[in-house]
Length: 422
Image (cartoon, rainbow, N blue to C red; front, side, top):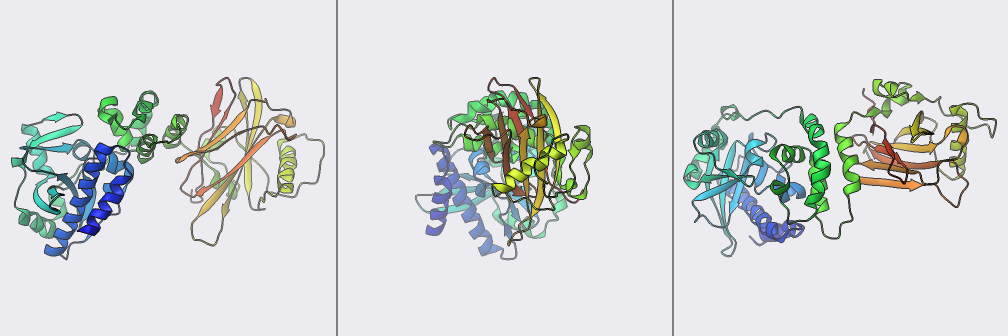
């Protein structure tokens, strides 16, 4: 039991809201008690914690329960309580109305922390819950209130179902395939409302409608943004929010296709132009084309120690920002390191046609789904007529590039992705 208490204390200690720390602590103890209960009474049943919400900080913080717990072929959600004296049980709406978190069985676990005991008390199947809600639908503050009498207190029957019932006997709703479109439809509202959740005292249900909350809960990166923004002493992250939503919702240019001397349809539609294969620059010469300009820039970068492998491929695009002509080069290659982890590199160079001067207040920003990776302007100590940065990510990571001026004028390119398979 002491090991379970230590694990619960460790997980809950990272929660920024002290009131929620206690509930997460109880949820962890409920999970330990349920694992021990199954081990003692049904060794043949295997528990999988891969997707369990209590082990994912943002989900543990915002979902008052232990969802996505896999027992054999069944999904289980544990509802922990410190006392069963109340006649009503509170079920988070997330685990009732969002298919990503709906279980086959809701299991009520009484946790008596002072006595260091826990009791797997009762359960309710999803189909029985739907019947109950059809008759008695009590919903408030993002939770459903159910009489405890709705739960079956014969835990042996739950074991029987987990062992012998066909998983198809309890039909769960399918996960909608339009989650990204739902987020896109409310993105402007979220850009305005989500910064209000910067303090741990604010609940999602106090700020967001259910449709807006659905978009947050079903996009893990967005939920992580809200969770991270509530951490103590965390720097402001509002500037990153717009980038994050674009990374999630907008189609990406597949830079991986460039290695095969191809542009995908999105890149073609945006007037990206593929550059020739890399060759050593032949020194300074009159610049009459973007390709020749690019040779000069990459030669200078190599002199500074930036290695660009010969198999790298790049493309460029001309853009206008507040009437100022700009040219952005993007170069990509895949990295083959000692580890088996597949990574790719993206080199970005922002300049102007004919290597003319950039505005002194121009900024180049690069973000991924974890935060702003780089934001830089012209180096006042150098004579460069361009800005460059290089980022590295796994093959499933995307990067978003924005160019801005100090007066708030900004343009953002569609995300860059890397997929050699399509």
